[in-house]
Image (cartoon, rainbow, N blue to C red; front, top):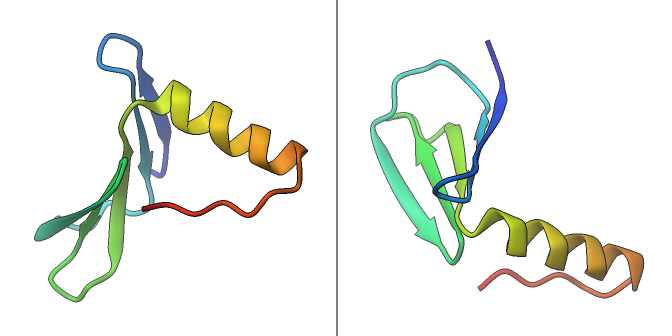
Length: 69
């Protein structure tokens, strides 16, 4: 079952894309992407989620390009 959860204590947003087993993860700024051995994304972890979401929404509202680095 795919789901989205937010942990208030750690300020992490988890977005489950699949229930397949995780083989490895790669960190890209505030985002950690977990993959299967076949390189399929399984889980997204967004660190400092409040800041990430607010910055993303602000950029969308102001029609600015969003660059994750």
